[in-house]
Length: 64
Image (cartoon, rainbow, N blue to C red; front, top):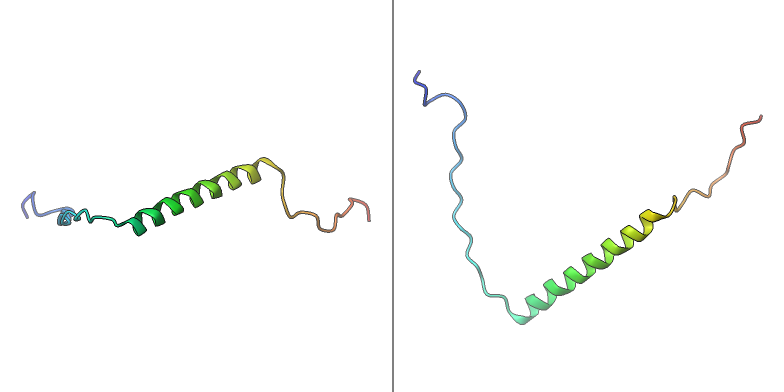
């Protein structure tokens, strides 16, 4: 057993991806997705600043 045969084998390199040209519809769709993601992130940040949203259930006192 020689030193080069042991251990993990290196994975084969994947071929490079071709850069395809985007038409106007695809550009508009990607722009819309970015705007929706920004709006979602803004809503998450606003919601995380407050306390719990759905914890208005029955409150139990410590007495029996």
